[in-house]
Image 1 (cartoon, one colour):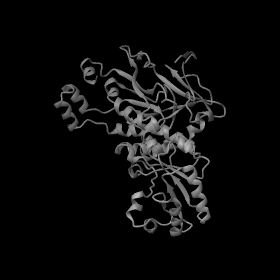
Image 2 (cartoon, one colour):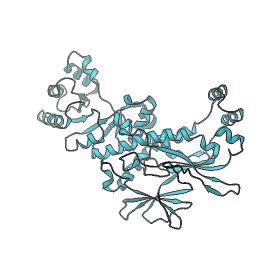
Image 3 (cartoon, one colour):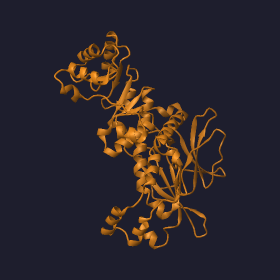
Image 4 (cartoon, helix red, strand yellow):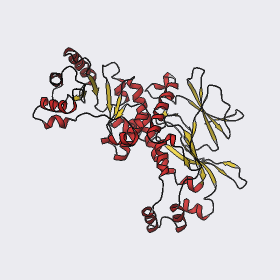
Length: 427
């Protein structure tokens, strides 16, 4: 497309691309936007170097004209979109890219690959945070995904409310708090379980967390408290009938005087398992596979479509795909979160070709990420992650309580497309 547009002189035509999802993943009632700040950081380094250009030349992927264009690529357009950490619903315009056709079309895979994965993780993580009812969760899924997505997943889960990650690179790169516990191999390395506990405590102090289900849990808990004393920081359970086992371990710890020793559970948890442990005296959760795989929805189904272009007179012309089941909605859009007087979200209002008429309680959803090629640094790096996490917390509080149910259901908010005169578009 790039090569052909350079040849037929449409490459410089001013266009609007939009990133959105036609629907939520099956059974979900809301989604969380994540990855936007990461995508903008990647955009600042999005270049075609000699090695890439030589590969394209040798394979004859594009013409010499396109190679010259790619060699000088620098995004000079503007991008606005939902804040990272924001809620999204069907047809929410998550990103609007205004640029020449050539500059915008080349970003499709970059933006979709980042937001589809990161938002899937954040959306799953938010459900787990709600199910946990205020108890902290740690992301521990690096061994269940690729090395790069592991870092992205830790970042996305933290934005959605997880407290920490076991991935140290996520801590270094994005400022996500880090934590970790010993594995079963540590216990198996030693001649006795007591020897393993003593060595760990000597190295880490009594505030450490001991893994107590390598052999017999009851015997291990007794050994752990005897070795560390009643000020043992915590124990971790990674197997067994958790609802029953946690209650038994809590009673045992209390009987041994270790009333402040915390209990962390892991063992293939997802939002449903966490919800099933609400009445059990768990202190924290460690979640791996389910969070880094979106708990059954590893991608959000986002697409990136051309929705408007300028004609020869310089006027915007709406364009849209009409294929059955995959139709898009053309036109310049302005999204607003409709809220009640109490601040509860009631609808996703999207104005077509002009801002919809808003109420005093409504909230605008778009922020500027890039203006004339300059990326706004407030959304980048560790500060951007913290800002996204804080915004996610606020946005989640706007949801009606029924939206937090884990059962399958329709989107929590209706998406309403409306023209400036108040007339509506049926979806």
